[in-house]
Length: 271
Image (cartoon, rainbow, N blue to C red; front, side, top):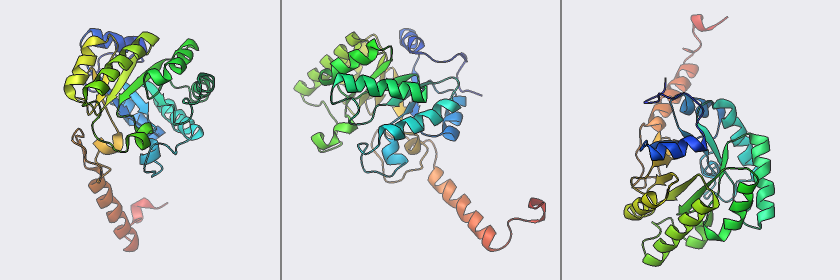
């Protein structure tokens, strides 16, 4: 049974914009596999993001850069199969849309055709606006991503808060307006000052989803972080809603003990 969810219909980009107009907050969470996505969807999530954070969470890479188009499609297909209500958004991985608009559209179409997801997310502003427009012209919904853009970590050199300085802040606002005018249905703002995110949220008509950006139209977190499966990642914006690392470790330890002591399987657990 969903939490605080009265409308069981499939979430669409149009409904998300309606939610902003009605002052209803939007909940967004990552998922990368069928079993997890099924739980997240049935709980009442509005948006499931098949993030390129799968590079870190699922593959153990230090950054999001190594994950490939094939890998993202694999994860997205699994999530889509599990989802009935949530809007499924898939990240376009690094290198699949930065070269030129034609290659970006080709890769975007492939993700949509093979994964059956509902929309795509791209990092960047005016630098990729031509690609965004062409993907939108192909009939593919696009979610923008500004602020700390993990695919550009080698350029930034740090995961610190972005847009503290006036020039970068004004560029972010300009980029947000450009993405809205191009036709994006929503924008993620990552790790920027709350006051700046509030300004963008008020100025734009499309939903603004925050992560480390204060109160916006909605919020997004990485599921492994918010469930406490990870231990070493503890940014200020992260709230852990469970401690699955401890719970799972204890359960697995109990299983090992029972196997080695011949307590498992017992008589009732055999055929």
